[in-house]
Image (cartoon, rainbow, N blue to C red; front, side, top):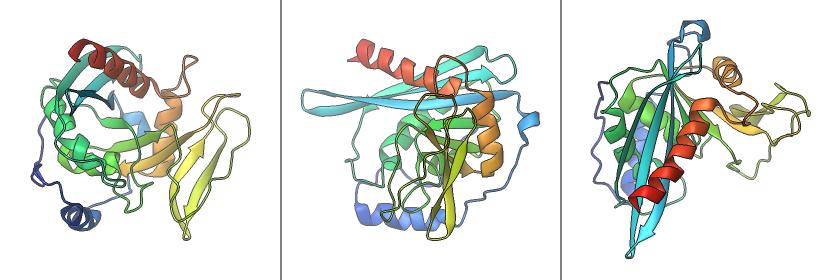
Length: 234
């Protein structure tokens, strides 16, 4: 897996974060580099954190699936001390180093990455799925379990039917989509990361949802794996 290092990791100042996000926004392309029917391998990415002796640590899990069979075909992870402080809107700067460290261990090259978090649905359109795409140089999708409220705008709840959705419109722009992936469960929040459009992102997510969870399989498995890593590494 070839990584493109688009900026250094040793930033921890909000002014630097803003400048980098503003510089990177011009690289966002919400159009497809790959169609849904051309996907063979997909990956889910998630992170978990814990505190130890007054320090913050994190672990990143990447779970790779055969898109058609849904079989797990590779797993990698990374872990280490977190040196970047938490600042709302700039979570990617905490997570990118561990994500890249894990991605460099991949033997397979996923066609698309799904992140437990947001992409374009972000104050500055630079959620973790979008930010990471520029290092990975791959299409990415943000899949969030909770809603990031921007400019005081609430989402409209979709109907209680599998596949129902409502686009999230903020300042007359579509930031993402709230989707009911299963009947009688809470919806999730999908947004483009990069190099993909919203309709294709929606199709991919729905293709990867099964009866076990409202989340797409690779994201759910990555989430479960981070819990195991947190227990074993702590």
